[in-house]
Image (tube, rainbow, N blue to C red; front, side, top):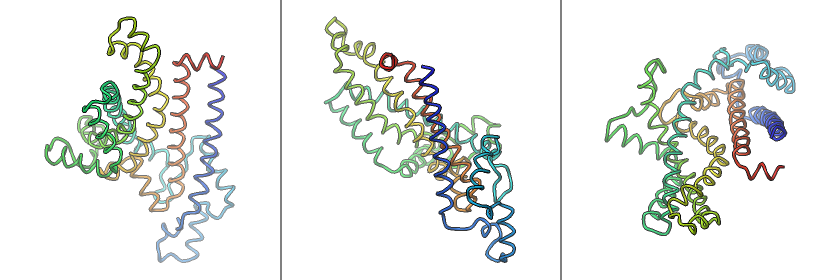
Amino acid sequence: MTRFVLTRLGLLVIAWIAASLLVFATLRLLPGDVAQVIGGVQASPARLAELREQLGLDRPVAVQYLDWIGGFFTGDLGTSALTGTPVAAELAQKAQVTIPLTLMSLLVLLAVAVPTGVFAAYRSGRASSRAISAGALLTAAVPTVAVGLLAILVGAGWLGWLPAQGFPRDGWQDPLRALRALVLPALTIGLVEGAVLFRFVRSATLTALDADHVRTARAQGLTRPRALLEHGLPGVGLSIVSVLGLQIAALIVGAVVVEQLFSLPGLGRMLVGDVGNRDLPKVQSTLLVLTGVILLIGALVDVIHRAIDPRLRSAAS
């Protein structure tokens, strides 16, 4: 197990460095000039040259990359080219919205996908199962923006229970108001991604119902529901863990769209604005942090899956 963890960490570092090269190179290909954005259209060539020197844009590209990536290993994520504030401080502030939103979306995803997937598999072939499957297929096919607009229409319009947009200015000083502001966005992301996970849970449950050990349990006198509960669902749970990393990554990506729709001051909305303003130091650091988080979650899921699944441990030994 120790060898597997060390190997997984080594692959994580290699993937993260490769991602940093890709992010750095891709942003340099974008049109626009940071110095021009800061200086404005009336800036003289001398002023633009001065700004490029201040931002380090006049140095060789390789030196810019090494300075940037070296700062990560010392905790320095750089400074915003537009505001002059440390990127780490802005990321920490915006993460206070995005992290709770992602966690709430994960709870919605699991609450929607797991019970409906198991039920649809258990009732396979019946009208109720077909109706749930059709609803999940429709939800997965609908754009996230459309689901969000529908959530606003129902939750904030017809029912009037929840705010349609925005987040409290004082942040989490009033936890209830902050949580209410995240309910509709979390439902939007959770329902869309839950529809995707539903199909996987349903398939895994169908496989479990036809497994030999479940059939043996039923032959020994257990009812179908009890055999599924005691002998089938543990295997389904292991299968869910194996794809949970991908689902969490999808939740983080979904937050980029949803934060725009619901006017939430999170990482996704900040990233979209920074790309438009060509704040390259901030954009590249934000992207690399998000990439690192997704890679780390994937590695943790792999380790947890390896630890709780005896089949993987026995295969390795």
